[in-house]
Amino acid sequence: MRAGAAPRTLLVWCPDWPVVAAEIVDGVSAGGPVVVVRANRVVACSEAARAEGIRRGLRRREAQGRCPRLVVVEHDPGRDARAFEPVVAAVEEVAVGVEVVRPGACALAARGPSRYFGGEERAAERIVEQVAEACAVESQVGIADGVFAAGLAARAGRIVPAGGTQEFLASVTVEALERPELADLLRRLGVSTLGDFAALPASDVLSRFGFDGALAHRLAGGLDDRPLAVRQPPPDLEVTGTYDEPLERVDVAAFAGRALAERLHERLGAYGLACTRLGIEAVTADGQELHRVWRHDGLLTAAAIAERVRWQLDGWLTGARRGAPARPTAGLVRLRLVPDGVLVHLGLQPGLWGDAGAERERAHRALSRIQGLLGPDSVVTAVTGGGRSADDQIRFVPWGDEREPARPAAPPVRMQEPVVVAVDDPPPPEKSRRGEKSKLPPWPGRLPAPAPALVLPQPAPAVVLDETGTPVGVSARLELTGDPAVLVIDWAPGEPAAITGWAGPWPVDERWWAPGESRRRARFQVAVEDGRAFLLSLASGHWAIEAIYD
Image (tube, rainbow, N blue to C red):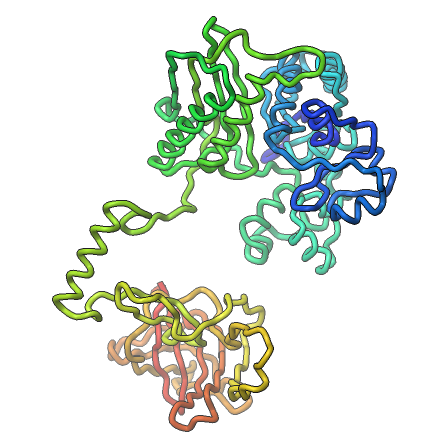
């Protein structure tokens, strides 16, 4: 296996699983035109429905218009998971280490079955036969490097040769990423296939499309969607519940499982971790042991953990299988949740005094007491609002007052070009706004990210010189009279700093129609040789430091 490549993965995929689950659990005939809808849109359809021109994403009414005899079933994730449990159990009879990707698809490492059955093709055939014999369910197997590529291979019924995953993915369209907004944007940029997307530099993808786009870029390149360095959790992260009365009803077992899920999530949160795979273990009253591993594309929240526990318990206790019951031999007397894979999770930052509870109330009372002694302005909080400069975007609000920005603004848009001219227009007359939906001002000419760490209460005087020692200025055509080379700071006389990098100018001419409030200046971002970075402004020939970057 090449360095950095994802491991060989075998994925079992059951086509149109929500429709098949409805047939298994509710008795709906999957041989006819059947659709499963969620929020009035088709999420799955039978082969007969596709023959009538019905596709995923259609509205319910449009689908019914194309096929008047269409059977419509509401989407039920619990039903899908409950019906899929016998399929996973059938796969486990011939292979170990099965992970449930989602109801209708499960994955496992391909190395073990392929060596045992004498090759990947024979292993795939054996698993398909086992599922058909045990559950009377149609399935397809795909083998490739990584779960994502194996899923696409399963839909095509292919076994991708080792090392050929990138070539296999190169011709697949970007819609296979199942990220509609990203796929639409990529197509508008001329990127139509996963090969085109994978050819883009990873750093550029991260800066342009964000973290989710970077994950999609890894998938397009044949890599797995999560790092391989998933460490084994310490034993004390596992949670176990023992019950004197065996759990035989689904609702009682689900209630017990939810309590365990909340305990597990709290324990993971205490270590700054989050779960990506969840192992669910149960022991019956007569000693029968049950085990299942659930896999998730993202990080499992407390609600997601509880939901998967309920699905699994429902599948065990109900035993929805064609032709044969799969219920445990007795009620459950012990449940155990094992975080089979955990990652450091820094995406959730709680409040300074917690999100709720006595600590937050105590802090509120203490700060209100300080205000009573020293005045309302003695305790303030910062509110971010609109504006083009760093000193315009922050407003200090007394503790307890409504946190409304002084200048509303739409979310900032990343500026693609460093030189932007922003000129305010006079406010439009009120009659032109009547009957129109109000829009938040976008503040053209706003400084690009990152925002400075420290905004000075009063700008500090400074001087910018070129290589010859001549002060640098800006002409009326926004051209510099020289390249900035030296920064002389007023509070540090005799210690000029060499400029190693700069960006700008960003000119702005604000409120030109109000003589007492107008302000015209050009702004620069400057980095000096000792590692510091400043936000400078040039107004009326005078330089000043407005803010400092961290």
